Length: 419
Image 1 (cartoon, helix red, strand yellow):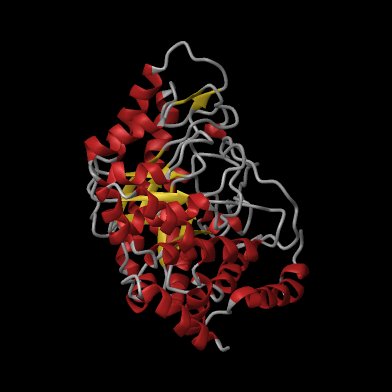
Image 2 (cartoon, helix red, strand yellow):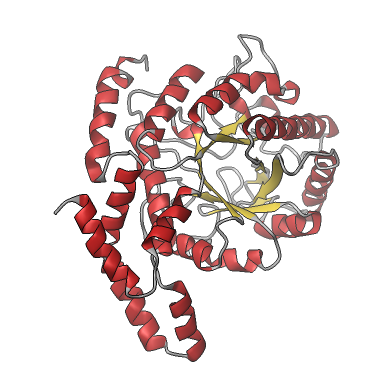
């Protein structure tokens, strides 16, 4: 049968449960995923005085074809976007500024250093998100930035964050989409601290100073991102989940949950509903930890499906800003973007095709037998036929057909690059 015929047959199976497949696909079209640029160059960035990767971050693998300049990175992103259904956003770090060969330290970055990205985003019809970069810098060499005991170093990073907010606001103004400015710092200690409170007081004071300036929240919103531990901060992280959750709630900014930043048995999907009771919006960085924050490419596993379900069944599609955060240098980087982003969209579609209202009713009635039975049966419903039709309608390759243009791009473009 054709893709359309398979779709019509599958549609009937879902509709017998009151699921409007057409409505689900219309909603899916409206959901932007923020695709992280740093998968394409292994988080190197393009600073003139580029530093070695540091700050508890590591990228493994040496697959050929890494982007080595902004044009290559944008070309690679274009190739990935052509294989991903929908209109999305691109997430930038400060280290992706373009300064025309001039050394511009991070506290002096301005919107003008990102004009090429904005013009490209307009052409591609994508939005831009932003992150100040607190790693791979001499002033972060000892693992402390906004919580540093040296006032001069703290002041440098405060200025960097203030400038980052202005850059994010510029993105929102130019592109007509609210830009997320996400603050993550690597601050922490390798061994057990003798004072946990004072660094957190300094981090709070630094954030207070950063957020004191007015930014149009229709153009840019701020988020803070926690972490359980990192390389070099195994015993203590200043910006813990409890710290940032409290700070975000008190200061009316977003709390960003990274699915790789918690204990392996701790699920981000389980946190979404709690935060939505107390915040109008929250943000996600969807990753795949393998025993630690290893940032593997996102696959369609149980947790990804559960994240999608929590967003959809709680009517939070307009309340959760979904971003991706993984970096794998052992495989084709364009393929990594394509696999991870398509899987995130698949998880949302899977959730949109569930009879969520009926399942909620079963729980309220205490009918846990039927609830479990339906959970399991829907895992083998013809979801793939709906996904294939959606891809066809959105003008992107169906099933594994996207691999062919990636292989061609690798042969003609990526393989020609200097390593």
